[in-house]
Amino acid sequence: MLLPHGYEGQGPDHSSGRPERFLQLAAENNMTVAMCSTPANYFHLLRRQGLSPVRRPLIAFTPKSLLRLKAAVSDLDDFTTGTFRSVIGDTLDPAGVRRVLLCSGKIYYDLAAERERTGRTDIAIVRVEQLYPLPAADIRAELDRYPDAELVWVQEEPANQGGWPFIALSLPEHLDGRVLARASRKASASPAVGSMSVHEAQQHEIVATAFG
Image (cartoon, rainbow, N blue to C red):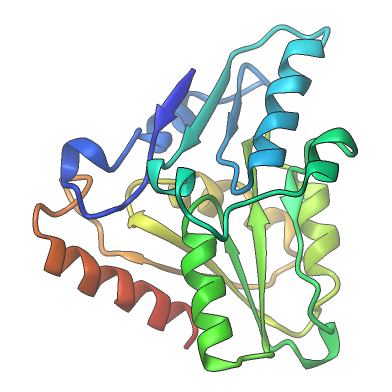
């Protein structure tokens, strides 16, 4: 099931594919829930699904804006080699990192653009491409590279929606007591606002909070 999902200022009906509802139903390996950030990883996700001997539903969320975002590209070699990556780490020198931002989907590009704009080298960005089954071991392996860094889950969705309710419930037990903070829109009854200016202000606030 391919569901459009991305906060692009187009209002409630065009923002959320309701990942929190599928994650609430996810248990006992009954489905796969993913939100890829690169074309190649999406390709490998579909390829894995088609070739897997285990038959279970795949719920894939993707925003429309990545179809035309120049930063969201993959080399040809990325398609012809490799496999699906449930977690995509950063290439920064771990020695200088004081904060790790975990995210899923489109907001990665907002965070990466802000980091480039500000020249920050103390913030790593880790992409969780598969939300369920939670790739806890892969996340843990990546976070172990930054043992003293603060951890922040960043999402575009309101706090009561998106991946956070599931991540907040499932991930902390794998963090050995490390605190996982959150940067998101405040809890809301609606998936998104109907004003582009308010949407942009909220988006800027999320990124600013994530960068501390």
